[in-house]
Image (tube, rainbow, N blue to C red):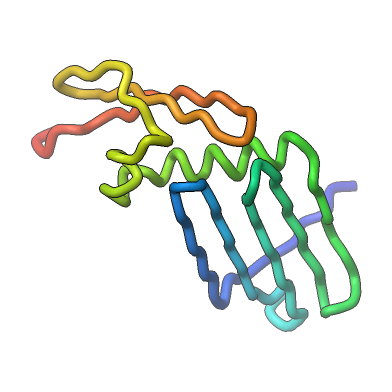
Length: 124
């Protein structure tokens, strides 16, 4: 049997910092249109944390493992292009770039991330 959970987002807030890398996100939503859901996502001091609760009573997830930390740091890294101060910080090193992409590296919390950011031309 396959279960389907309909979540309608009502509000979400996120705060990020780069030196040191920190991300705090909080979401409030409703499940099936009426049951409240809250979710939290955090990365700080090399640790990741993801927590979700339905109806204020039932914990759906509560994870603090290395994969959550890596995912949270990756979210900060991927969002770096939206914040010019992130791109020029000591936390991010540009490795290479050409006309349509830039490759960068971020090292934090014992993790080493490398990503290629593709740039699209307006006329594409």
